[in-house]
Image 1 (cartoon, chains in turn blue, brown):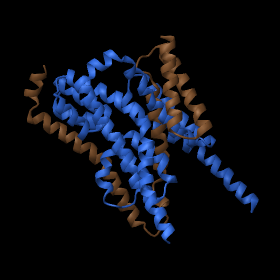
Image 2 (cartoon, chains in turn green, yellow):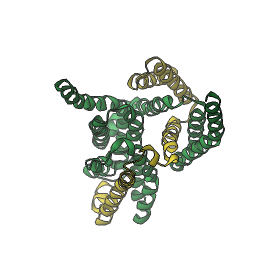
Image 3 (cartoon, chains in turn green, purple):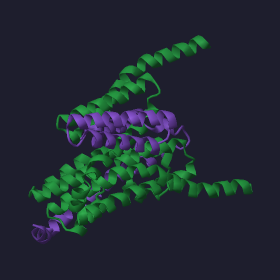
Length: 250
Length: 120
């Protein structure tokens, strides 16, 4: 029993550390993008503290860029709210996908602020194999690393973005590749049968094509739906096969 | 320009900023609260059975779509596409060897950067 308690007690720091470790690849993507945001916000006329505050409380990349651009262009503010929330509407699918791993602990309520695209993707891949009592510690540390790197990157961009991008242009060019590399690592384990491989390939290729056509904001929900449709189109045939084999073996 | 915006960072713009922040938070929170309520109602049954089937398919679909959009290089040039392909290949190969997250990501970034620098 004492062994068991010491194992469980040791599991919490391990989960915190694992969360930090798992979120590290995000830094390569978050910091350069946040630096760009900080720089653009300053160039659009926002102050340093305002820019940092935007990243702290909105904390959603694409919609922040849109917010700054629309406000600087003098767009109607009601339209700014609608457009940015429309871009973020895909987030409604994230928590339900993780629900079975989260449980009804009230501490998840503030932690939902950290549920970005990338933190969702990380959680969706890592939480299923994790012990129930480690998930909150793991998520909290991963989400905090991501959030602080976003805020820190924004601050760097707002204060010294112009000088940084002039001196080291490769920072902006190379480090954001961490994002597709990380997403690839997160989807690969799913490609363990024909049905999932086809659904994932469809979603990825369609998202790429739609973005190239100039519609980056609808690309993700549209492509995900197409992937799901491919999944369901292939599913009946496989289910029938499975039930036939089950009958044959019985 | 900066001073103008600071002067113009009026109550309306602050309210807009706060509305977006609260709205985005609610987009993340409300589905969580709704699902926990739903799961609590099915406490005695199989937990996974109370999760809508389409949601379990949309999750990986969203991640795949995010991968697809993030693959598009910032500058659409042949070199960028070549670097992207090389970076993804390196990521894939290291992942097959290690089945981890950090090393394949690092390898992808290094190879992507290397191709960019060498062929620039």
